[in-house]
Amino acid sequence: MAQNIDRLFFARDGELRNEFSQLYASLFNHPEPYIGIINLLGKKKIVMTRNELVDLWKKGSNGKLTSILKDLESCGFICKYHSIGMKSKNAIFQLIDNYTLFYFKFIEDNLINDEHFWTKSHDTPLFSTWTGLAFERVCLLHARQIKEKLGISSVISSEYAWRVEKTNKHPGAQIDLLIDRNDDVINLCEMKYSKTAFSIDDDYNETLQQQRALFKAETKTTKAVHITLVTSVGLIHNANSFEIQNEVTVDDLFKP
Image 1 (cartoon, rainbow, N blue to C red):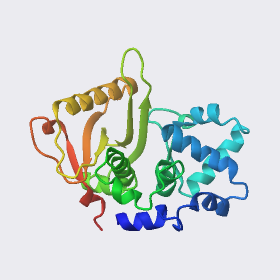
Image 2 (image 1 turned 30 degrees about the horizontal axis):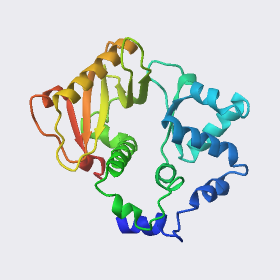
Image 3 (image 1 turned 45 degrees about the vertical axis):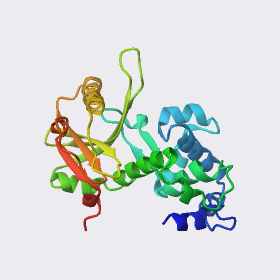
Image 4 (image 1 turned 135 degrees about the vertical axis):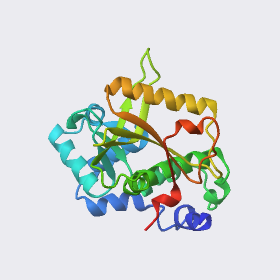
């Protein structure tokens, strides 16, 4: 796989090396404003509220921005999440197109002219960070399978994202997937990629508990909040793992 990625993206004549501009031009008559929004989502925070996009875009009316966001969502480049407990105008937008994200991260500003860049990047911090983010996107695209594993397919539920900015009172938090269920339970989903079974140490357990407490305090929900851990291999059971109500592995995401 690594050699194929090198051939497609990093070889001088790689078929996907210069695909970015052609991709958006083939879909939109005037691709520049669409690429502008994609750049904001891909290079600033990846996850942004509509109000943040309005403040940064400044290239047209709010109506034009709404139209662009709808087009990008229809084409599968971005995903729109309503923030739990908030109105639609405060929706959160996330860039989910894997090619575009890969292009921004590794191709656009890659000054290393090495046709074997990807093969040589394995086992580096850069590669580890990327695989973690890529795994999170895979999980988000398989929310239905996560719900099947949890045994709640027959329960009416909604998927949300949630983010609160850092203040003097708390460190802030971002949760990419919440499953809000009609049976008075909310699944707070955490996605963790690792090459071996994942172990929850004391520091990470404290982070999870603080995140859950902050979510409950900020949203004032009266529902039970269950921490659900989605891992690539599985979970090592230790004293901290008992704080996890549900476990999901990558195999559960690809069951027919």
